[in-house]
Length: 596
Image (cartoon, rainbow, N blue to C red; front, side):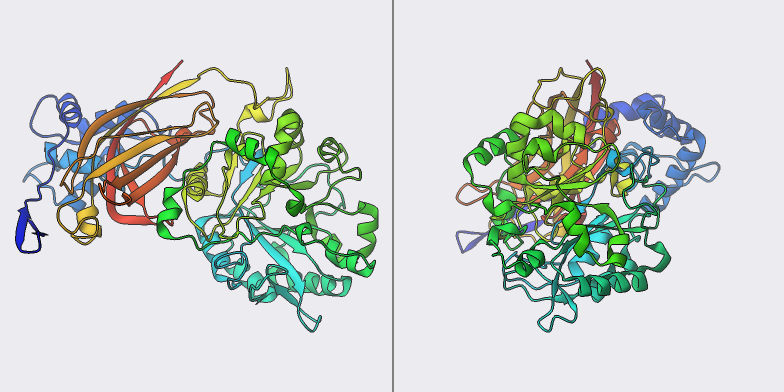
């Protein structure tokens, strides 16, 4: 029972009741219990086998294990003789448990991890040391630790000489950000590198150092990481090792210190020459979830109209000239070398050298312009080499961009500001829930094929699968929020938004009706999504509270990789704006796939 104020004087009371099991749940229970009032291990096993998703499923053992867990969690009655039995309400509570009945397959690595690194998308951070916005926030090892705990595998550090030019500071150059020491960052990376995943951590170094400090960096790196630091015996490997080979190892990737070399040559430094990004965190809460991620076709149109001079991050010097300036030991420790060949054109930058691999970096704007005429060249380049995409320089609040323009062209390192939040970052969180959330997701086969032709992202693909999603109901807000959090005068009016993020042809959002004055909304609505590239598609789920006079309130979200969804009725836990799971808020949903 809840009491709300009405007209400042009167009070209204609302009775809160648990919603009964949906009719689909009742039908499933009747089907697998043989029409009786209770279900034992055999019936539960039949139900689990009917979902048919887990190749390692051991029917009897799994049913017994689950039955025991349900009994312990829900205090299910145990008969005097025999094993525990489930009633319809017990079965409903089991289906509505995100611990016992999650939407994704078991959290374990199941992709082939023995291919070269270029065959994988890698969970990549941008300016990983920043705590807030790109202009004035503090630099710290704390956001680095948080990123590693979430499973991020690529950490970016900007290295600059300190004021005395005898040590190395990590900060965002030519801004008001306060520095943190390189040594502190390296020690934190070593401590937390493998808490979320055993697969390699790559440190991308934005190097603005003279050779004597590069030598100091080399000594620090060797001292901190010791034998877990991987570096190749040959200077220019023809192929990168696999994630499996590099388990438990740390790698360095860097490009030369352009600013330092220009200064020594008496040149001037344009503000736009760095990956200058005033673009780091600090948007207000409403803006964080209220702004929709733009379709990447729209981003391409915007990029054509914008000046990308500020984003000229990888305008490399002639590689031979650069190598002369690198400290010898430091140079030897670099596994993934970044750089452009001389020439400057996009076609030149995307030429693949059969004798060595490298990393190329493009801003989101540069990528959006490049894909117009060089889409297949980019795909071909990323089959052997690494492509890193980073946020444009105007993202001062640490906002992010649509990652799919990078992913569909094979870009492995789509770098995001992890300290912010918002819909774009939710997509990143969801994408890397795949493959056991290990931070490495194998690229679809079609992106690695060169015969009969290289994949062209601009070509419209036929529909491969249809995903049907039914949203039954939601619960948990009454436990996780104050009674008046959403409305001072009545219970909330929740509605759900469900849709697909992916290539433009697949991207769409739909919504349910709003259920008035109810903490346990029952929608019972079904949606159907045609998917042309299901391998990359993400299922987006959001809940909002309808407000007639003001902006609708945020009530939870999650993003799930479609390739990992388990068919059947599942409990889907929701997260807050920052991607942290709510203790109790969840939806009961059903997923069905149809091949075309």
